[in-house]
Length: 476
Image: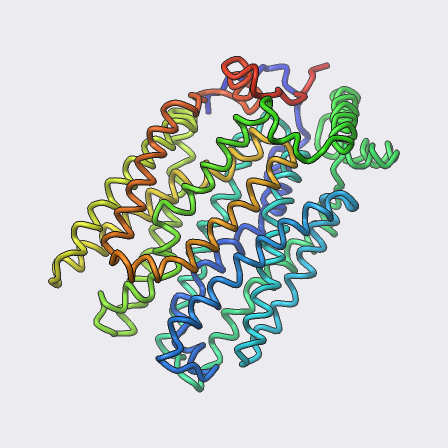
C-alpha cells in the first residue's frame, strides 16, 4: 500500500498485535450491525410467541425496531458523561456490562423485550462513542487511516451475521420455536468476548488518560507494549501534550465545537452520518422482511434466501474498499458511492410503479446492488471520517445525531411509504444521495496516498480559519 509515510515514523513492536487490539475494541460494531438485521426474519416467530395479532403488527414492529436507536441516543449521552469520570477502557467494560442485560430479552413478554432492547441500545450507544475515541488514542497514526474503517466493516459483518441467523427459521418457526431466543443471545456473547479479551490480553488504558491521573508508569507501560523501545520517550512526550490539550478542553464549554475553527470537521461528520442513515440502505435493512414478503409471495424459504443474499453480498462487497482506498481516497470513494446509490434508488423508485414477476426480481437485484455499494463506500468511510476530523466532543455530538437520524427514519419510514408510496421513499433517498455527491465535490478533500495526519494538514491548509490541526506524532 503506497502512502506518503515517512520511513522515520515510529515503529511498533507488532503490526499484528496493533491490528488485533484495535479489532477487539471495535468488536462492538458487530452488534451495531447485528441489531439492524436480526429482527428481519425473527419478527413473525417473535410475534407468534408474544401473542401479537396482525392488526397490532405494524405499530408493534415500529416500536420494537425504534426503541433500540432511542436507547443508542441515550447511550451516547451516558457515554459522554462516563468518559469524564472513567477511562476509555472502563467505559467499554461498562457498556459491555449493560449489554449483558439483553440476555433477559429472551423472555417471551412484549414489555420485557422492549425494555431490554432499549438497554441493548444504550450499550451500543456507549460503544459507538467510545470505540472511535479509544482507537484514535491507542492506534499509531501510521495505521489509523485503515484501522478506523474496521468499525464500518464490523457493522456490515454484523448485518450479514444477523441475516444468516435467519436460516434457522426455515425449520424452527412459529409459536413452538425457541430459535428466536438463540438469535437474541448473540449480542451478549460479543460483549462477553470483547471485555474478556481486553481484560486478559489488552488491558490498556489510554496513555493520555493515565497521565491526567498522574500515573506516568501506567502510561509508559502501554506505550512500551505498542512501540519499539527507542520511540517510547518521544511517544510519552506526545501523550503528555495530548493530556494537556484534553485538560484545557475540559475547562472550555461544550459549545466550543460550534466555534468557527471546529465547524468544518463537525459539518462533514454530521452530514456524512445523516446521509449514511438516509441513503436508502437502512430502510432496506429494517424493512426487508416486508419487502421480500411481496417478492417471495409469502414463501418462507424464498424470503429467507432473499434476505441472506443481502447479508452475504454486503459482507463480501465491503472488502473491496481495501484496494480502493489508496487509489481513490475518501473523497472519490464517497462520490462514487453516493452517485451510484442515487442512481440505484431512483431506478428502484421507477420500477416499483410496475407489477410483474420480472420487475419484482429486478427490484431485488437493485436492492442487492444498493447494499453492496453502501457496504463498499459510505458505511466504512463515514465511520472513519468522523473521529478523524473531530475531537471527542465533536465525535459525541455527531454520534448522538447519527442515532437520532436513525430513530427518525425507523419511526417515519412506514408513514413515508403510506404517504408517498415505496417509490416516493426511494426518490427521497436518491435525492439525498445526489445532494451528497455535490457536497463531497465541494467540501471533502482528496486524500489519496495520505496518512491521517496528512489529511488533517490538507483540511488545515484549505480551511485554516475553521479547523484546528490536532497534535501529531513527533519522531525522535
